[in-house]
Length: 453
Image 1: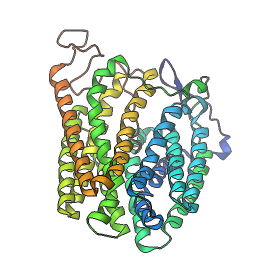
Image 2 (image 1 turned 45 degrees about the horizontal axis):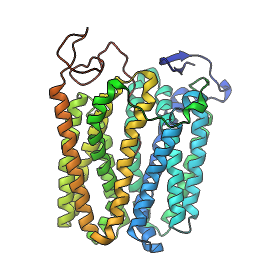
Image 3 (image 1 turned 45 degrees about the vertical axis):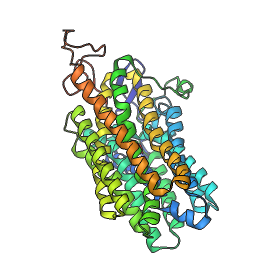
Image 4 (image 1 turned 60 degrees about the vertical axis):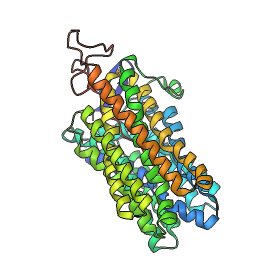
């Protein structure tokens, strides 16, 4: 069986031997389906606590600021693990990283089941974030590498939409458990613990797709670097990422509190369903807008973030749940389109040995924007009030999204594509770009990375 081996100075190359005894291997199609399913389940688990946090707040009587810390702890843990272990599986293999990550995730699920107070929940969220961050890049590669040749594009699509879809589905299912059971925490996280155990078995019985190579210790040093060729596009994409992920943080982090305290609705199912709307729309947008050029996708996404945020603000101010849902759908499309478009724009500008550092920089911006503003919002709820905090948060998103669109318009109109062969017409020092914002076909295009939430 063929597998991929990474080299520091060139792209992936084909290698042979299977590193698992043939008699114990899963069939390739089952290994592909299992990898994709377990990857999605990892994000189902990440979305599961969202409707439960307000239940914990009522049960243990802690302030709203602590609730937002519990929400954001996941993002900060994920970011730390992603920066430290993002490239580890290229050196020691996919299976060791995935098995270790899934076992840590299993431990986090058990921490949720037996948590006696909010401190344990925050610790469980942090451990969960670390496990998800460690597994994300390895799973992204594993799903594509296990995909049969005729389904390689499907593998790439799955890695792009599974995180957002999983987050939304996790919130929806847990919300239903809250609505119809008094033991939602035990039901949800016990089931997820079983799924993680099964997933670990799937990974253990799947073919290893990478040969070990030296340098694993060096990959544990966090690296955030932007190649010179990608710097202009990266800087223009920073406000795009910030606005999209701030909106995701607002919807996933504060919506359950909004539904309970502003709308006066005490329904776990409603909280879960509402939290489901935004990431589900983002996943659908990532699937159906991939045919647009990357720059046009960013423009569509930025407009969606602006309009969706405005509708959400209107829904909150008018205390109208349908408007909140509509804004979540529009904003979710904006989130999925703007983030995927921005990543598609800068990814071809990095050479193979520069990609890990570049994506670390992208996710640094993304997860800081996802977690930190929610923590700040939680601290402002007591002095400012929930309504004032949410409206101010929305104004901040609108401002950043506007800056993002202006930056994209400026770079699109001012810096014209350089002609192949070094012709004049561009002040760019980066590699030749085609009109869609992608690198010219004279250099290989990397696969699209996953989008962890």
